[in-house]
Length: 103
Image 1 (cartoon, rainbow, N blue to C red):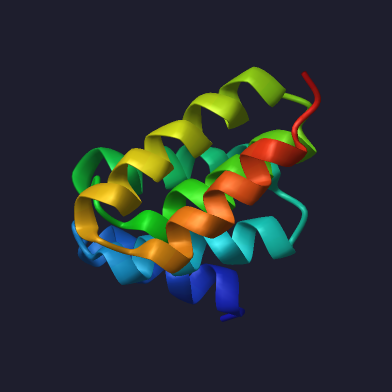
Image 2 (image 1 turned 60 degrees about the horizontal axis):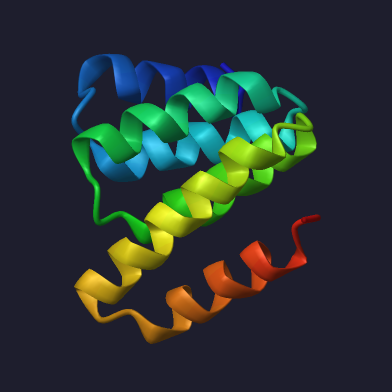
């Protein structure tokens, strides 16, 4: 089994495992499957809205797909989540990503 298959298997066995789903989404991104990664990030964030890293990397995946307005919305939601959880570093990274988007 390759890494992607292992991660898919882990998510299938335990769909509520945030770390496994995040790992699958990241591996999908690295494998050039940005659209599939976006779906995994969306499922991750629906179940774990405070998983702040999912907003950043989900936004990056959306940017790769040219879906800038969706990326903007995800970054903004991530800023709210980072503020809620007190994660100033993640908030700063999300704000920087948002600021780099074209107007």
